[in-house]
Image (spheres, rainbow, N blue to C red):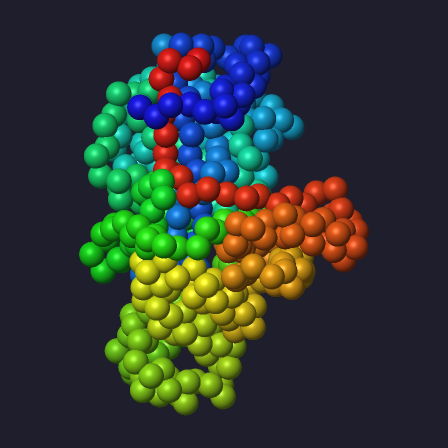
Length: 414
C-alpha cells in the first residue's frame, strides 16, 4: 500500500468533515486516489486506431468510502455541492442518457451501477462515499478518473477482484459511451489506470498491450504544466469532439472499400495518404484535414517515443508543439482561450512545447517546461491572460505536475 502524503491527509480531513456534515459513514473505510493524465501522443488517436503514449499527473480525485451493510449507495461530491446527496438502490437506476441526470455528476455513479450490472457483476453491497478533486474541468481527464475511481471502489466494496486491467478500462469507457452518451475513446482511461510514477505508458491497440518507457538518463530537468483557462467545457457528448469523431469515421467508411482501410490509423504510407487526398480532397477538404493531422501525428509518434527514451526533452517538446499546431489548424478542435494560453507561454524561454489538451473547445492547455523557467511561465500567464481574457481573470490556474501512479489506495487513514 502507498503512503499518504501531506496533501492526501489534508484531503482526508476534508472528506471526513464532509461525511459528518452529510450523515455519511466512511470512518474506518478506505480512500482511493485516481490521477489525471497528460497525453504526449496521439491526442484523439484512440478512436482513430493509433498507438498512444502519455503519463499520469498529480492532479487527483480522492474518494473515501465504506460499505454500509445496505442495498443503498450514498455519495456526496465537494466539487458539485449543488447536486446534493446522490442516493440510489443497487440495480435500480434510471435508464441510459436519462434527461433527469444529464447535467448532474450523479450520472457517473448511476452509470457505473448500470454498466456493471449489464456486464454480469453481482453487486450486493451498498456504500457511503465522499469525493473531492483538483483536476481541471477539461483537458486532463476528470471524467475518466472519476469513472475508474468509482468502478474500482465499487468492486472493492463488493469483494470483487477484477485482474484484467483492460476490462476495467473497457467498463469505464462504457459508462461514458453507453450510459452518458459521451463518444470518448480509451486514451484517458488507459493513461490513468496504467500510469506508473516516473514512467511513460505506451499502448499498442493491435495487441491491446501496455508497456512502460522510462525517461532516458541525462534528460534535462523539466516540468509538465497544465494551463487551466478557467473555462467550463461541456461533456464530450455536447462538444466539437463528437463532430470530429464522426468526421473521421465518415472518411474511414468512404475510403474503406476503395483503399482497404478500417480506420484513419491504417493510412501510414505517403503513397496511400496522397491517393486518398487526391480522391476526396476536392469534395471533402475538411475530412482530409482531419486525416492530415492523424497521418502526421502518427508519423511523428516513434520520433517522439525515441526522443523520450533518449531523454531528449527538447525534441519531445518540439513535436508536442507541432501536434498542437495540427490540432488547431487541421483538426480544428482547439478554442480561443486554449490558444491564448499557448500563445502566452510560447514566448517564454525554456518552454519546449505547448498545445491544447483533451477533448477541445474549452478546458486546459499544457506545456513542457524547463524547471528553471516555471516562475517565468507563472509570471507571464498571470500578467497576460487576465488582460486577454478579463472575464476569466479569477478563474484560471497554472498546475505544475509530477508523473505519478494512476491509482492508489490508502488503508488506515480514515
